[in-house]
Image (spheres, rainbow, N blue to C red):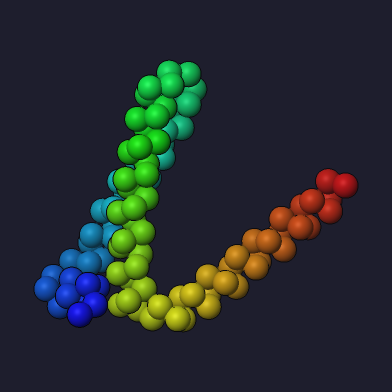
Length: 99
């Protein structure tokens, strides 16, 4: 059975949404901490912040997979492709402006 279906059926939609919000907030905090540690120059602290960020990224990715399962993975993938294409077009325009 699909693990995301099991999680949804076990905990329900609202709990899954709350998990996603919580994990995204934790990733935001980890990114902010990493940005602060970069300026410290302490390689140990920087690596610790990177490790924390990696952990939080993994948590968010699991939650995003759950949300994709809940709200239409194919539709979300299509939107994602459009957004990547738009970002690439902006990057190409910026490169053209620089030249």
